[in-house]
Image 1 (tube, rainbow, N blue to C red):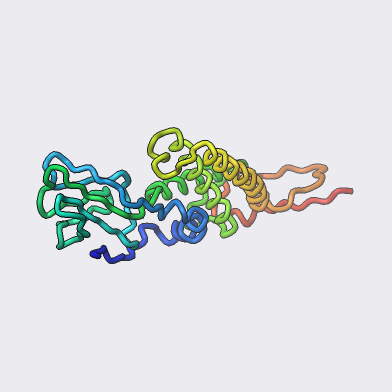
Image 2 (cartoon, rainbow, N blue to C red):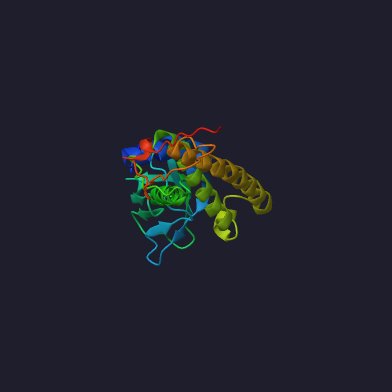
Length: 243
């Protein structure tokens, strides 16, 4: 049976992004990045040459199969044997010849629920959100302390779950997830658990920036810069003693 040979795609992320997204986030949502659609019926365009399917962003590094049904029977097809090209990004194929009336094309493929730019957007949002928490900081992703990585990954994970919950309200998710009520409850439990840990981690991270807080300061004036950055954050340790 003709199949498309898997080709690993290059990483779309910068080294700093890959450390968080590929190293920490993707293992947590691996299932959603390789969802399988089995034997889906394609929808031909008016020319009957191009055929589109329900989901885009197919995994080019995983096996994809097509079959064509005609009056003569069912035939496996592939690039060079009935198919001119496959558009993995948009989930469409171009046929060598137009479909005759009554002909069908079906596909078995795996797709990524989340697009790479979504991960990058979620990561930027999380970094800005953490920086905005008091004491306000201005870390870039490249210069953020290593201990921030887990919390950044949690923030991205929470945004992914929120998107899944929103999609659960429309038909798109129900094509893949057949039990929307139970699935929604499960996702909400995951989000709540992650959000609790996320808030706990942020408080710890911000205390780490300031260092140890004094129990009592009897007198004196202390100058504190308004913006903590990757350059000066290690200097913010105020030591005090209580009598």
